[in-house]
Image 1 (cartoon, rainbow, N blue to C red):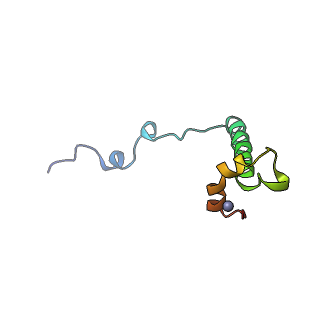
Image 2 (cartoon, protein in one colour):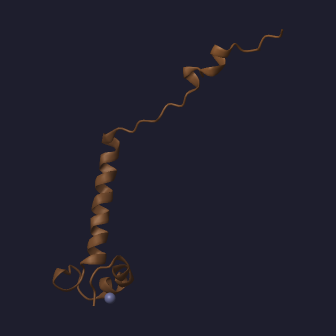
Image 3 (cartoon, rainbow, N blue to C red):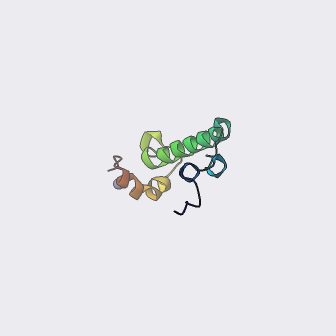
Length: 79
Ligand SMILES: [Zn+2]
């Protein structure tokens, strides 16, 4: 009778060195980017959704006209 080349107990379990180790990202590295994305998103949401009429920060209607299609796309009231 022929014996298998690798004993069954060693073939079933991979060695710990071959397992992938997930890369951990510390919260301290994510936090500034999360705050930046939040501020940028809030500014974008303001300019698309509320930059008109009494809440307007920029004179004229060019910001309103520039974001007009996005306003309708996102369902903000316009006209
Ligand atoms: Zn409109």
